[in-house]
Amino acid sequence: MAAQVAAGAVPPAAAAAVAALPFALTPALADDAVLDYTTSEGKKLWKEASDQLPIGEFDGLNPHTLLRDLDQRAKTQGWQNILTVTVNTTQYYLPRQYGALTMAQVRAHSNTYMVGVQDRRTQNSLAMSECLYKSIDKVLRMKVTNVAENYEYVINGHRVSDGPLFLMAILSHCAFKTQSTATNVRIQLTRLHEYMQSEIMKSGDIISFNTYVNDRRSQLASLNQTMDDNDLLIHLIDGYKASPDMAFATFMAQKQERIMYFNDPDNTIESVMQLAEQFYTDRVNKGTWTKPSSDQEKIVVLEGQIRSMSSKNKKGSKDKKKKGKQGKKNNKDKGSTEGKNFSYEPSQAWKWVPPAAGEPKTKKTNDVQYYWCPNHQNKQTKTWGMWSRHKLADCKATPPSPNSRSQNNDSHPRNFHALNTIIEHAHDEHDDEYDYN
Image 1 (tube, rainbow, N blue to C red):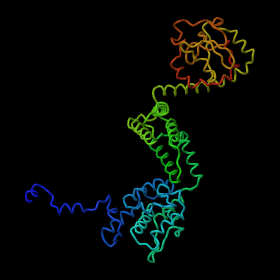
Image 2 (image 1 turned 30 degrees about the vertical axis):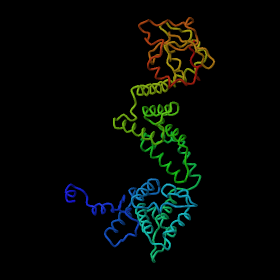
Image 3 (image 1 turned 45 degrees about the vertical axis):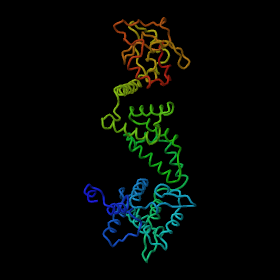
Image 4 (image 1 turned 90 degrees about the horizontal axis):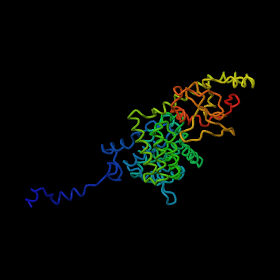
């Protein structure tokens, strides 16, 4: 025996002592016996339980953060039993399903440990109410305490507050627990693309966006309501696609395509949210979030040029209207030996976009037949070619010399190609002001 002990074997008495040690996740969960508040250990447990929640000075605007903090405190202090209300054999956990319960149902539950009973639940209830009292701001505290009978009991001649009822009193000033509330929350979740485009989301902060979504999911759950995850996932990605960062929007559009058409297994709301936050964080760290690409910068410049052209040509457009048909006829008779040189309104911009390689050089617009004629020059862009009503064979303009012709005459110039998405739907409402025959 001495040899075994010397070799490190545990004596039977010591092993029994180790086995007898109670296992507890936290000090408060070591047992459910009544706490002795006259001891230093009891006073320490009271202080930890009744301390202010991390949210601090809660103003009633975002109850879901308060409820998450309370849930965390309940896990370490053993409050789940007093926060779980049973109604007709169905259990409801207050921090997540408070909207499914009435104050009367919660009071019936509280009576089981606050009336004629003095055990650990009674102590925990008062500690919870003290914790909540410290965690709300002065304005909300005044509203709640104005009707103290909603949550108070008399025990041993002392008026004391019940934690679950105090929580219900706080929540009564935060949200209307009605079907209308659930409907409004669902509407908000179907309009996530509008929220992403709102002024509050102008920076496109994806972490804040996800918090907004999760808060509304929690609010639905608190009302004992849900929203189909497949529908919510579509609305979530639609919100991402409305992001001001084009690279992120494109990335999420591709993710949506993989989920919808290629059975992407990574298709839960939580996993897509996590992916979105990772992409966002990476671009923020690299300093590229919402920074336009070189192609986007060029399009912005071209858009500015079009607006500038529009303002410059407004006066000229009005003057042309006054000339009348005779003025138009005289312009046509003048001709040119160097090719006609035209400006254009934004609504006429499509006439200067050449057909791509392989595309027909004839087309109809507003029931008018047009032909691509390379003998006309745009004086703003210095490019040659325009959609005209006459055929090339009937053109009276002198073709430009090879040296003056743009090398991209018969295919989309780079600038025009970028502008296609800007002007492809331009209205042809001023055709009568410009006669290109």
